[in-house]
Length: 81
Image (cartoon, rainbow, N blue to C red; front, top):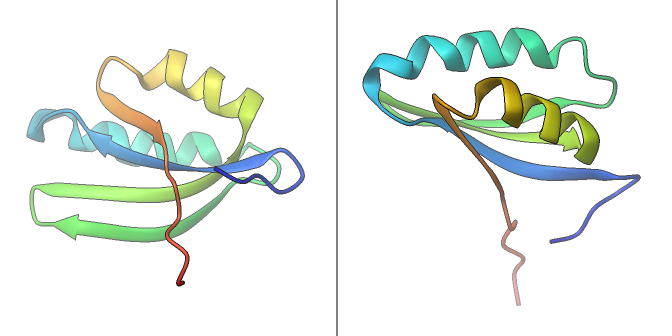
């Protein structure tokens, strides 16, 4: 996984349907992180997910805060051959 200026891509998704509201709280928490950005919104109704760019240190802090209800895993962007 490549990083640019210490910023990596992460896939963020609720662990279950009841945790979907925590995805909104995660987005709000990202607003205070310098360099953080939502790169893509995806999924389907009831199964939303985000691809986000986060500094590694902030990703660890957000994982500690939201890890019980959200999956926050490194995302390996696909590159064409």
